Image (cartoon, rainbow, N blue to C red; front, top):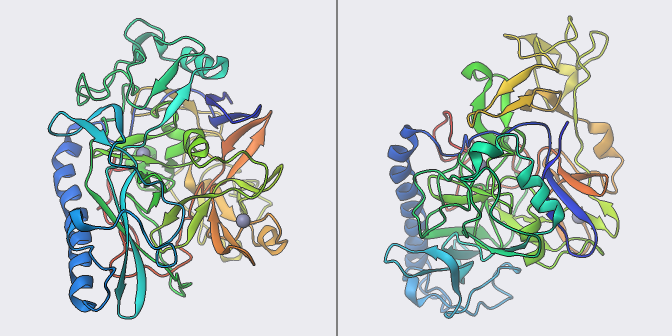
Amino acid sequence: MKLTNEFSYPGTLKILALMMSATVLSACGSGESQNTQSAATDQSTTNQSNESAESNGDDSGSDPSDTSDEGDQVSNNPDETNTLPGWILSSEAESAAVMLDDSGQPAQVNVQAVSAIEQSGQGYTVVMASGMPDYQVVIDEAVLTSLSSRPRANSDFATGSPDVAIGDVVEFGQDIGYNSNTSCALDAGQGYWPPGPVCPEVMDKTGTFPNQPAQTSETCETGLGSVGFWVNGTSVYNWGDGQSYNNEGVWQTLAPVAEQYDVDVCGGHAAQGDYHHHYYSSCLADMVGDTGMGHSPIYGYAADGYAIYGPWEAQGQLAISSWEVRDYSASEATGCSDGARSCVLNDQYDVSQGTRTVSSGPGFSAVVRTLSNNELVAENGYYKEDFYWNTALTAQGGNYLDQYNGHSDSERGYHYHVTAREENGKLIPAFPYTVGDRFAGELQSNALTSCGGRLPGGPGRG
Ligand SMILES: [Zn+2]
Ligand SMILES: [Zn+2]
């Protein structure tokens, strides 16, 4: 296993954002079919959000704070008692250092507006964002090493190596020498993104989140596309990248693993123009001031309204995912008769439901090729089907999270965590990474996604 994407963390802790060997060209957004799909996707999202805001306005005209049906009238000074906290609002004067909008002007960054609306007696927070974070990364030895040691550095970079030096401050979208996807305009991110992903675009994003989330009794799986907003207005994506071994739909690849070479120095990339993180980002941690000295602050919100906190439960203590990799030994409840990837669990949430035979996945030491022509070892933990929810861990309480990757405390109520484990002073993303494979809370009709995801399935959608 080889570690990559190393980031510096405030203080002395070094954070490593990913693992294993080789690069994946973005399943998130390379390929011709995605361009044709993107317009429809973006439009449906925008329309859905706008319709929600408008109907909310019609339904509750008595609420003076409801100006959400006119984007330019939305209050930029939310009443904190009426909206969810933590959003990173940009002032009028703040704009991107590199990224430009459609009219060629510097893009607005972070969250443009947060407002309160009421619908059927429920309070909601409406967030409008460009999808452009104003990240800055200081290049230190660890970052430089991770860039220089990319297995395909010779072709990933125009000159064969990154065009940065230790001490440089890299702005979001700044050319650091990558041979970026041809979708990237020369003055809007070309050179900042590794070759796989399409470049992000300035979006007109709206997310509506219930202020009082409610636990759901239904099974509601997260899907491809946005499943929440980070507090800087970028998108939360789940574990998936829409890919599977031999495209058979079983042995589904995990974006944080398979796309580890398809993310920028902040651990993000775009699909259909939508910049997102599937997992912990040290740049986001910097932005919210998470120093790991106590329980992490809020990093974002899932579509069900529950907050997603950072990886720390307390000083020096990480919140711990209760999802574990299966023991494939024939003698184990999670195993297969041949000890290999020849069966899947009937229910990843209930090991007692047994297994069923499926077409075999690759061996644990097999090398698989990613969409970006990088080669990775398909070790246990490479596929979603390698995992199961260990109820015994959740039952221990404390830092162990539930099946949704959340837990409750008296101060924060129910909340999710970004999950990572620490290895040699580095943080490595831990499945399911953010909000679990399923939402803990109910998705309202105005939510930015629906159970199973807004987007149709298919390769390269994550
Ligand atoms: Zn917590
Ligand atoms: Zn992605």
